[in-house]
Length: 394
Image 1 (cartoon, rainbow, N blue to C red):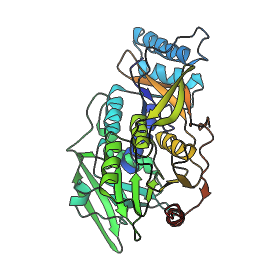
Image 2 (cartoon, helix red, strand yellow; image 1 turned 180 degrees about the vertical axis):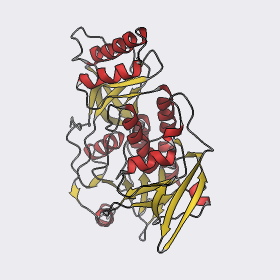
Image 3 (cartoon, rainbow, N blue to C red; image 1 turned 180 degrees about the horizontal axis):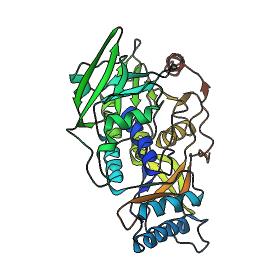
């Protein structure tokens, strides 16, 4: 096994569909997976067969090796073995896909800088344009309708498929870099005006942490995903913004990310102590915050059904430790740990090896985290009301 443990958002076993889901999250909401610190020493092997994690990894490796020896595709053999394993979080990636996957965790992707969503009528709307991106340079704005990509109508298509078209997934081979510099022609509409723009894809960096100040002094920190450097960005924004009106940590739609970054973010608000416990092949381990965090700043965390993985780990820590009031709706419930195995042809299989729990022992996988206060579209308004009370010295 490789030295990284992954902690991932749900994906399908077929690698093409899996990659589309992963990088849709990268483009629209941020990186889709996360990483636990490397365990001290190898996880114990078990003789119990493929029902246990070590046995499942061995079965997948064996299937891939036998396929290669027979002149068949190791990746396809691994996919079949993963499918038979019953592991709903498992996935198989080609070598090129996995390299791009790692780039996503580092906060980099190839695209045009558009965030999008599907409206109730099936139309695709631009929700955000990354500053300095090809889309921004072309004058595309939030609210514009995306009608087509390279002549293919996108109305009614899943956003994941639209993202695959924008990224040019069909233009890259399994071991080639993503197609930076290639062109993509977008059909757009703004009001009654319809036009086309031909853009050159570029290597872009995600800005996973943004900040804004609301009237009354409330600071809203939005973390789209826990990519590399997210925790440092949170600390810097806390250092440069007053604490007078309190802070809203907005994790809605945060699909996960590097667990080390989530733990370091917890350290920004906690003075040491337990963040989570987890197991790898039955061996219990713990994650702790570093001492010296800002424990005096009133804090509210916003969550919803799109809050998952590392974002749930952070939410559970701040809630269980009594550090924050959690507002919103029940989180997704993705609390399992995946570990990657490199296969003979360079492809990578991820299989579940364990689960994590919040400081109070709450199991997140399949259950999610229940907020302290339920709120829908008025969650931010509820948060401001709560912060008013938290900041009242009486």
